[in-house]
Length: 117
View 1 (cartoon, rainbow, N blue to C red):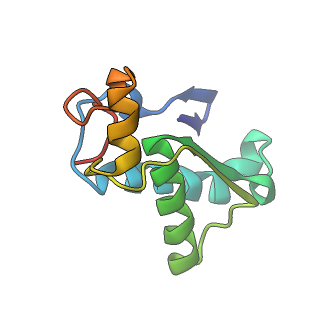
View 2: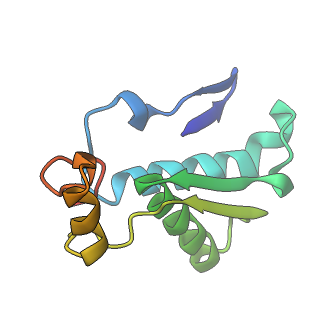
View 3: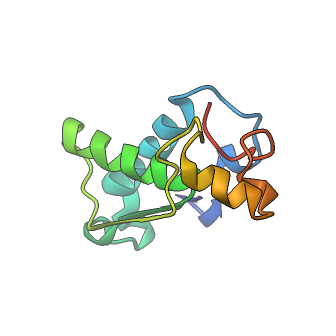
């Protein structure tokens, strides 16, 4: 995730920070979207073209940001894209087992550190 600040795109704080309990990262992402909505024009950003995108657990965050925007009404996303969102955090489905048995060890719940708890 990249945050846009007064000097342009920068790594978002949660990329390098100590993992935070939910909903901290969602709120941080939403605060960034609010900042872009309010101040983006001063930095040459067009908030009407803002999109939210995420992969894996980031896909869950993208969905959460979209739902927060619809509920709160102060941020609008033009597009939302989710790539391989984690929709079953317990990872106890047949497809997870099939992939784990096939040798894709990253799919085993004990080794997949990207899944939300």
